[in-house]
Amino acid sequence: MRTPISAVATFAVAMTAAGCLPLEEERRPAPEILEKPAAIGAGFGAPGGALFLGDRYLSFTGTDRRINIIRKIGQGDWSAPRTIDERSIAGASLAVYDGYLYLVWFDQFGRFSSLRTRDGSTWTDRRTHDVAPPGGRPHGEPALVIYNGKLQAYYALGPNPDGDDALAWSRFGAIHQLVLEPDGWSFYGAFPGESRSVSAAVLGDDLVVAWNHRDLGSFRTKKWVARQGWTQTNVIAKAQEGQFIDAGTFPPTLIWSYRVTDGPDTGRIKFARTSNGVDFQHHATSLFLSEQRPFSFRVGDGLVEFAHVGDAPNKGVSHNSIPFR
Image 1 (cartoon, rainbow, N blue to C red):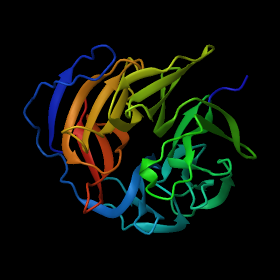
Image 2: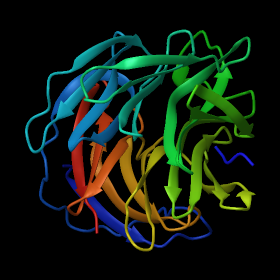
Image 3: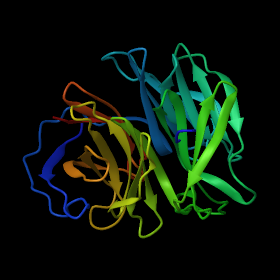
């Protein structure tokens, strides 16, 4: 059977109620600045990130829609952006799999596209996969995850908009799944979603997929439980879009880094944690504003490292950290 697919921060901790993130947050003193925010490029779309061969890599799409890669060796400075002559309709995603660093995006024709590198410098083996039916196109960035030993991608399809891509929700009613096989990317299936901002992560033996539903932008999750299949959809909260990262603690924990999309905190970056993919506990609120969902790409040394695209008009791509315990 086929398997499925540093910031200045104010801290708040509260237990969830009725499956939703709390609205009221207990205010605590702001910790010291861990890393001064510094713009390392200008662009749009959610950034991607990964640790590869001991170095940090970030991907982002420039204002010309070309993909840029930056690299941080050890504790050194970020490199100057290296532009890859590929265009993306949104951001680009990174993942480490089978000894390679993979770069995945949707090109200007809406095709699922990937490159890979073994040394972090030479990108080869471009592959494309047509994913959209006539009149449709993918939305946002693919969510990458390694599950059951295979690299998988989850994404939403939407209509082919004439205007702002950011307003396009999937109206084909499904979140789709691709799996990297030896002969290329293969389509494995879909489930109803009407979504955008798809995220995926492994939690213990299970796979958790999260997305923003079109119903008032509510954040929902669905789990693939080993030997059981997909569970029911859980509505967690409204007015969020974000991304999971494995915190690697015991019991297994995921960090949900997200951008508030409605209300007085619109644009604010927040963090929550979950040990079951259903119940969430608020962890931290950053003072930074973001135009896109943030990307958390490392948990270690008592920190969660994340990147985000700053609020307009500067749109600077920044790398920051918050404490995590």
